[in-house]
Image (tube, rainbow, N blue to C red; front, top):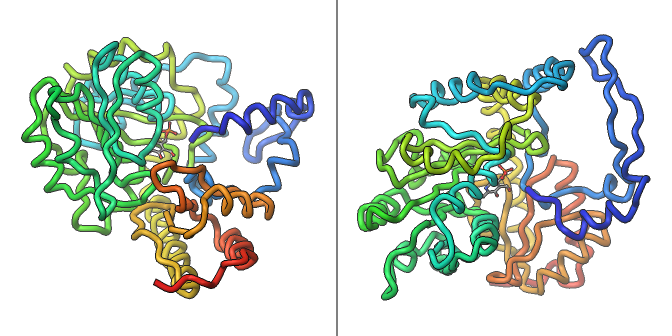
Length: 380
Ligand SMILES: Cc1ncc(COP(=O)(O)O)c(C=O)c1O
């Protein structure tokens, strides 16, 4: 996810301190020394539970493939092979795969391809912010539809209104920041009712953590075969590659043909082009991450329940929880205790979003929670 604007400005204002370069040699890479930027201490010492990253990092196979790509950093990358591998992995043709610099680039391409001045995007409130931000930049209308009481997408509310059907709908499933899912059956009914002119962007960024639920079915594992449906995945979460930036969309060749012209030229970097192939096929590492996450999530709920807290049922690697106090205040408390938790969501202003960290990071989280004056006072 994105560095916050404030943090970005902060690191800029540190000037050269942020840009000091020291030679570092990577293990397993012979005769290569790379320059690594030294993070300012101020950022480094925070526990980061604010971006839904994979707390355990990339797998060792994935790391090795990154290291193997380092000496070729001077070369442009031909990513046909990566697209072909992703296609094979999902049982589709390479012409049905579109690569992006993160899935956020895919979102931008979709917005540019299917929206424009006067056209309309519909998305949930709250959900991932990127489509809304990109749509507003190009003068499109944005209609925000609150989630249902079960924190699913309100699909009736998202389909047409008196003013006609939307041009693009963004569905985040499971949803960030609520960690909740929208049942497959409802999504199919929704798609069945939409006019042929409405495109639907389905974001499966947290797919791997949701598979245990029978109400969740991926649109890649069980395709809907509809030209209007664009399914997105990212390498930023379960594969642990957020910093290398790679996402992809699977859709019909005709739909992707409309989006491709908006891609940045050579938008996939050489490290991730190699790493992604290793990560995609490292099934054991994925299972291990999902298993660890299930344990970490269970432990979070145990700790929450012990404090009379009731988080929203989570199908992801983060948890959304009503703190019954201003989220700004609670987030500030954690920041003072050197822990960063999710940014604020105006639609749910007493809720905090906590990305699951390692067990020791989570112990630090609960120690800081218990320092809140109202830590143990909730009875519901
Ligand atoms: C819903 C959603 N989609 C996508 C992403 C990842 O974006 P990218 O693939 O650009 O890193 C995130 C990351 O937090 C997210 O929450």
